[in-house]
Length: 117
Image 1 (tube, rainbow, N blue to C red):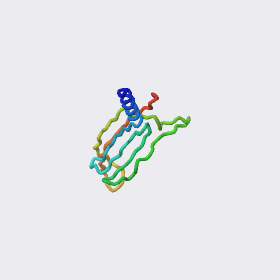
Image 2: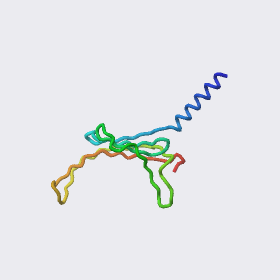
Image 3: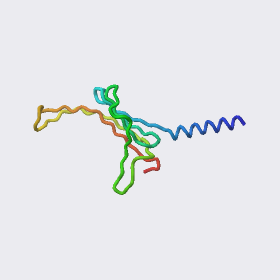
Image 4: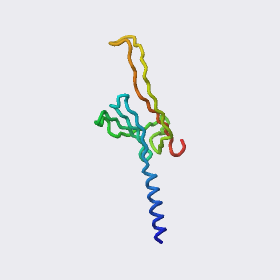
């Protein structure tokens, strides 16, 4: 009898953990002063931005509503992420400096809705 109760409690805990699943992907500026977090919490997308120790944008909701009324804002999971670093110089036609250095880190987050869409 105790084994059945323990099994039910364990199963309920596992199911609850799956429902409260949180996934996160982050990217920082090259100097590490700025950090952007992309979060999926219970299938909903959020983001936040920090500058140093200061929260510049607290966790905020993200989503898209398409012309046909379809949405991309719930039941999401992170399928994969791709991080890259860019360090290039480009020439501008006018401005204070002729050459501009572009250094940044990129993060691409591939999402899928849990229903397969």
